[in-house]
Length: 226
Image (cartoon, rainbow, N blue to C red; front, side, top):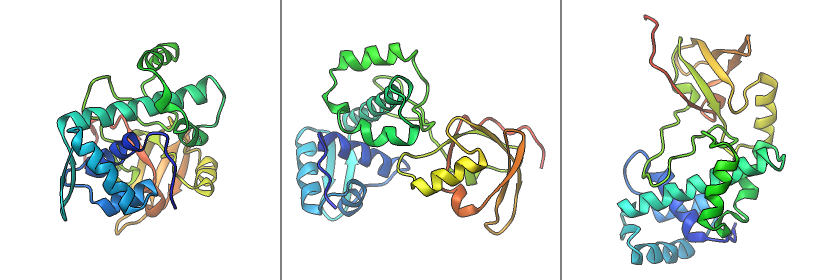
């Protein structure tokens, strides 16, 4: 399925950043799948970005971001998350609608408008999904591990991707698992077993597969003993 992005270069940079966050290279096929574009379209986009010094493309290997590319990618993610916050906080859209809507006009904003939006929103720390808004002129974003990576005694704040299926979002709501909610892990059953969480004073059980679709921020040092 082809998507008509207002600014395909910025969307490609964001996708490359996510695909290479843990190290390694982004393959053209993976980029095409992430963006919903044909491999030929992605190849042309990569060439444009390489000509601008934002990526290095090694044929048959993959694509890596340069230092300038990383900074541009993080700046694009920052803008997206600020616009999402504007849609949710000022216009009243649901958090799980903000991702789709932000893409339709975020790239048209002058930098000064983005800066003023950030101040008008009282300098938010996260987007409506719970993911951190990176600082200006940085080339990195704090990690957001999966909920399933936590261990008994850990506490963290929930973040849910905008691409999460509506049915999953609805089910998470029944458990009280929404962006910004603090959870505490009570138990983690062995052999890919479920997590038992404390959410808003109630115990909730979340299966391994679902817990890998939820992310967390503000993961503090563990103070319990094993």
